[in-house]
Length: 398
Ligand SMILES: Cc1cc2nc3c(=O)[nH]c(=O)nc-3n(C[C@H](O)[C@H](O)[C@H](O)COP(=O)(O)OP(=O)(O)OC[C@H]3O[C@@H](n4cnc5c(N)ncnc54)[C@H](O)[C@@H]3O)c2cc1C
Ligand code: SF4
Ligand code: SF4
Image 1 (cartoon, helix red, strand yellow):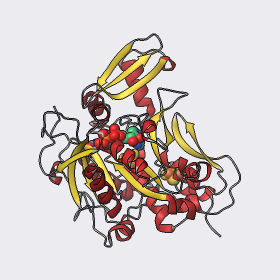
Image 2 (cartoon, protein in one colour):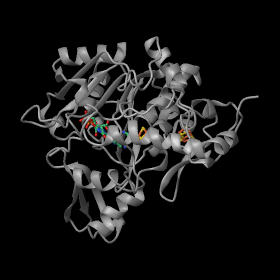
Image 3 (cartoon, protein in one colour):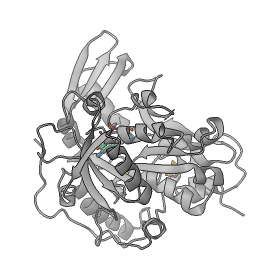
């Protein structure tokens, strides 16, 4: 007999190992799992009848992330954290979307959205799953399905909250009838997608996953912390008064900017201010993120992040690691078509971009080892948990 949702609940959710990636809800053969909010955090809940197909349990990246098997499956060989701290890749580049409006309204340089638009326009994918502002609760974000470049403009700039992106997998294949999908997600979303592909189940979803774009990820944060910024930090007394929110508003790296019902725009905090408030002392980091050793989305087709070094007058740039055949091909085609502009980016710049690397590959791995010693629940990443410290001082972006 296959594992059921109750095993997933016992072994992952109730042990604090769930990342809230939404994969279980997105693969359930009965569509019986929903992502609900518990204390304002997304969590999977069985709302229908489980037929024990085992899809949710097998695809879940909460408790087990077989990174060595994933490396073998994708790249033909395993490679530990220590040997390949950024994971395996073919090219390290940086660039920007040549559409000026897209570049200026993007999180970094807009390469992610430009690639997605190119993939949609050229038929590489039928549609994509991205993150946008939640239409019912504009102070929160949610996952959405897009099928043309006009719709990708609704994408939110990097939101620090965890969004169960993968929960829309089944919708995209069944309701939309898409046979080729692209997903933009955090490393843990990509882990779920690779588990689906490696197992080949559910077959219709496994076959449909064509392009996995991973974002570098320092962590996601409890909404309680974001609420603190809005309410106590910026004096927005009633969160329901928020009608629009932009985490990277204004010039890169941007500010958390909020529009309230009374028409007032509040600059809550600069990106660096709120990141350092959250990241340095880590008060609101989601607990599962404290045990995550994947900063650079090691098993994505393309991994995207910020460029914190001063390399050009316009700081709106995306760092790009092209890892797989499909990743490299689409990047090259999009570049030849003139929708993105790329140049080489020294890979050693990537770990030196702020505290994300240090907090995951050093502190996170060390913390996970400590938890293991105490017998606390920890995820299994298959590789031995060897710390990979940032060589030298952290470069604080100015
Ligand atoms: C939670 C989080 C933490 C990050 N941490 C780092 C870091 O420490 N260092 C670093 O260099 N880069 C980090 N990034 C990546 C960086 O902020 C940019 O997303 C990346 O450089 C791509 O920029 P772009 O201009 O190409 O993307 P754009 O073209 O602007 O596209 C942005 C994409 O991000 C997606 N998105 C936004 N919020 C989320 C979310 N919460 N979950 C999933 N998808 C989302 C949107 O759907 C959209 O497709 C982080 C991103 C997120 C969301
Ligand atoms: S698949 Fe994702 S959302 Fe579901 S239990 Fe596992 S980690 Fe949580
Ligand atoms: S830190 Fe890891 S677990 Fe947390 S959101 Fe990022 S990729 Fe997912």
